[in-house]
Image (cartoon, rainbow, N blue to C red; front, side, top):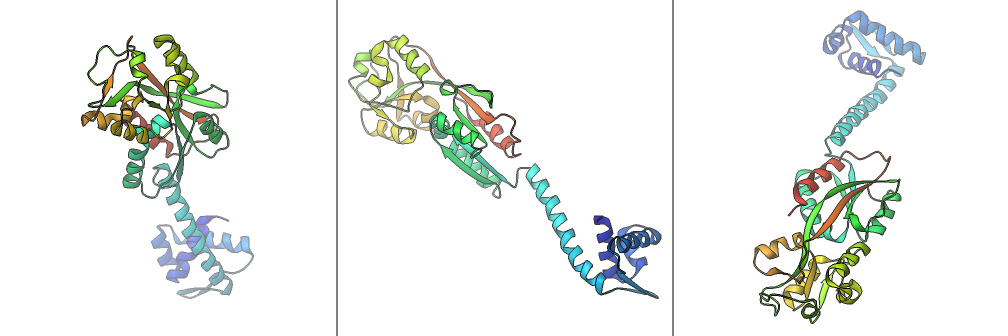
Length: 299
């Protein structure tokens, strides 16, 4: 059934005149008559009684007009919804965050979405890389941003580098190690060390650079995926944080925590990636998340 035929029928029923209906539709009267005849032939019933200048719906016509109005209204709403979805103002997005990306991005991303796209449904998942990858494969989330070194490449995953961030050791201002130089690993191990769970590759790098006692199994005494809680602990105690400096950007800028360098010093970089399920059609709103990551996931 042609949607134009239904619109034409509604116009005739409202104006009760082929001439007025044709003018309102910006078509000729013969074209309007042919359209109504086609609809009548398809349904096998007369829809309009043509009585001189007055053209009123028949009983069949009144029924069809009532349903046609609903169909046309639904079609308008469908078109509108698709346009909103294209603009990412409607629909949903499910995002997975590894611990460090969560500490840097999650709160500002949610704030941006609620302010700029209040009708977009946003769901958040947090966790270790393997759990987030499984959530991608189960289609429970649409995209994840994780530590690339903890990620095992696979044919069913699309991996896009999201950037590198500097990391190392942080302590509160006034800590016994604050201002000391040089700081040895033995001096560091006299204090608790807090960190997120570290990848095997990063563990190997620490051992290569600082020796066997730098292995996370020996070095890290407080492990958690909640980085903000770890940094609160660092500010309140003599605990030293090992992780990405951008997680503590505001605390560093406020002069509450600062970097300490363990000798021999080496620049430590975190490598991060956006991960999606290969071959899966993406929600338009994923563009918003990618753009946000490019703008905010930096030093």
